[in-house]
Length: 330
Image 1 (cartoon, rainbow, N blue to C red):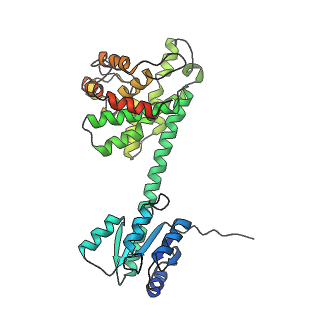
Image 2 (cartoon, rainbow, N blue to C red):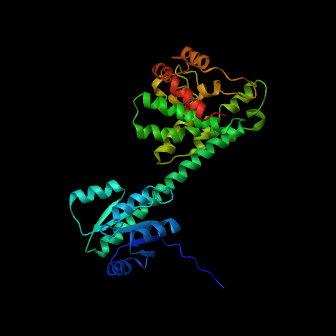
Image 3 (cartoon, one colour):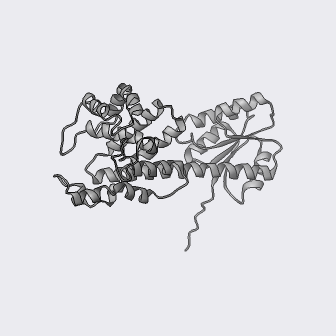
């Protein structure tokens, strides 16, 4: 016996008029799994039980109207992300404003047009899938970053702390909030290339030989190869950070010996954040430095290892840095 699973998206249709639900059934039943509710309370029950992919919700219903249902959906973690499209005979701007304030993503006016309904539903389901793919990709990026840290006997907290340090510094430098959020998600990949370094070198307790240093210094390029070329802004940032965060402002870094602002801004930011957290963290081979001592070293390296303008900004962030360290302590 063969069991056929129905993987079509699930829609919840809510309207107190059965005739309207029948019209929507005819329009949508071939492409979607459908569930129906004729009042707000039943709609909430079904949404909690099945978590539909999208809800078409009538505004004007007796008892609990569509606005109240939508606000209740958005207030619960399980259903907050489900897109809601309002169905309404109202076309007043104030009504639309109230609907968007309640959390809807779109409006459809009655009487409905079948092609418009299908197009709007497809569009919003596609947006949901894009959001899910973006979230999944970010989680993969973060987990790869943690994998590299564990291979290097670091804790997973290092990549979280230094990523938040990086975001704080980027905001202080006047970078756009969206860009700083992308940097927060890209920074964990800074040392992903260490996955390609032999354990005998990466975990060697003593000093590396010149030959071993040649191998170790390849990890930025290995990281860039692992991340690859991708149109995603987060992955472009991650590749840049991985490739350039060991460059030094005075040109004495690696792998290319870039000087000053030829080093991408994201790499200059992450370099400071990474070193600060490494210094203030306990490692098998050293005790943790105090935040003050770590900051003093970073200040002494302004213009040498680090961008002096970024260092000046970083010094002013001490309270925020300490709060991050406490929140994500090892």
